[in-house]
Image (cartoon, rainbow, N blue to C red):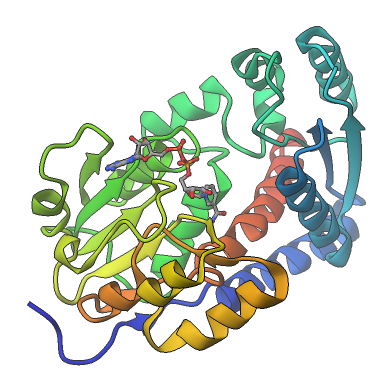
Length: 312
Ligand code: NAD
């Protein structure tokens, strides 16, 4: 069944901007009242170009808000022991409030050891087992940024979570699991789907709020979506093929093909935009939906961490 009007876009940009303004105000207050200026230490290992862009954007966002940040770049031959040693130094520095180790790490570095080496009070990505455990217990402290951003996006767009049937597709540590926990915390009835789910569409079609975090371009089609549902598309996938772009983008096709011709690719989420728009009530676009919230929540986590560490 289709719905009559196309899905409305849930744009993350203005909401991220609102959160940045709040963080800027909070930062100014921290300085005036306590002479504290929060500081993030971002660590990039190896030469993955996408990771380098992410770290650069995060560091720039901190500078724009008058927060401090420093960026440590290590080459891909770095060992687990060397990285742990750097993290210990950052843990011990009183002026560092947040530590972010950009993932994925190069092969040969043990990711779990690195995540566990970060002081849980400085773990602004919310990946440390202590923070994961607190979230699972319903006592969230430092929560992963993208999932926290999704909840802000829903709340500030006036979408009721309490009592809603929510379905999350994906069970990763970074998105699927934590966003499921947050939705549960907010009294949604949550179903988690993954690569072994049998008859995915049958399950996802029940959902008032459908969160897709799979890493599969345009996988979620009209048949997966309940008419009028809110669809949150977390996926970020590059499309380089013009024919594939034609099959995905509906009325946006021309501008997407121009983007491919101009820079070699265009981005699509895990949701098929043209099909979803014929069925869903609201949908987060890619780019411009969930993405902008991630950095905004990192800023907020770091300021929260600066306060919490000083008992303010
Ligand atoms: P991941 O690869 O760690 O996890 C993917 C999950 O999808 C797995 O749990 C898997 O079981 C599930 N899955 C895969 N195929 C499936 C299928 N056919 N049916 C049902 N479930 C299936 O990925 P991730 O780190 O969670 O990221 C997911 C997507 O979100 C990626 O495109 C990533 O780039 C994007 N992402 C975006 C942001 C952002 O800021 N917007 C942040 C993190 C990740």
